[in-house]
Length: 168
Image (tube, rainbow, N blue to C red; front, side):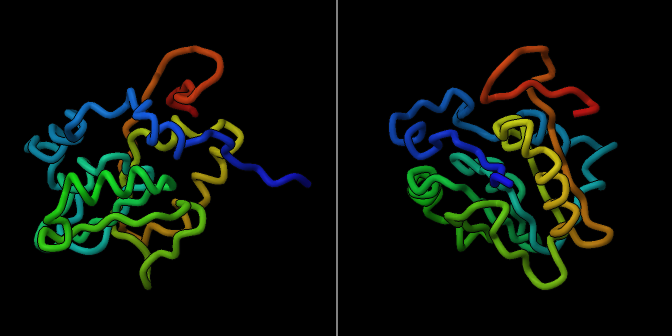
């Protein structure tokens, strides 16, 4: 059986700055989620969290607190280099950036308390969605939280981004 994989040249996209998903700031929906009185308490206050496909790292920075260590993961060396240049105070601010494949990166003992996915799911070919879900089920600890902002909720062919529905 052939291995399922993403054949998108993410390194090439970052190297050429073909990054239309990068708006130079954290996702407004994430910021609202963290500030809204009705939703901010849903986010675990302490532990280790993961942002796979972290891009330029803005959401990693936004999610990091003194008690919540965040790991931004990306498969592109250029993206991780940009993260480290853009966020030189990351280690002092309780977050870090790692070059690795989400499907291969080892979780901490006991798993992550928080997973955040905004643009990674829609960037993966649909054939990898079940693997994405299985991986999160494996690495999020019991009682942990997965935040998945779904984009784009439109009908279209091809990608990335690939169209999503609430049902996936």
